[in-house]
Length: 185
Image 1 (cartoon, rainbow, N blue to C red):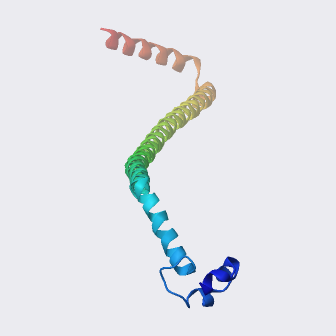
Image 2: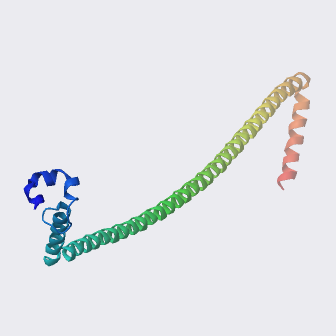
Image 3: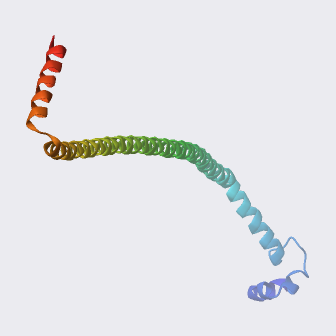
């Protein structure tokens, strides 16, 4: 009974004093704490707290698993979209390359066509210029010939007029008429 005379707050305040008596005693704080713990665990078991905690943890695990599955499916969908966009980008780049190649080929063909047309135009103009030069040359030659004939006729007229007398002129006229008659018939 000696232990009952010690105030209870001293037992709780001094663990060394609590451990000196018998273990199964209400004066032993270790026993009281052990008993309270067992009662607490018993209440938890009676209320099925571990199964509720397990159910809550399972629900949380299921929720996390569902979130992970959703994240995985979103990731796969994002990868699919990324692959699709990369494929479309490659296709667009290939199409742009084809367009550039076709544009270059068209530009080269147009440039070659323009060069050919310019060459043909220059050839036509040169031919026209040569024809004009030939025509001008022919006209100049004809003009020179006409002048030469005119000068020759004038010179011949002067020479004939100086050397010609009336008898000789009449003989030349008769001879010319006879030549013309022979050529006409």
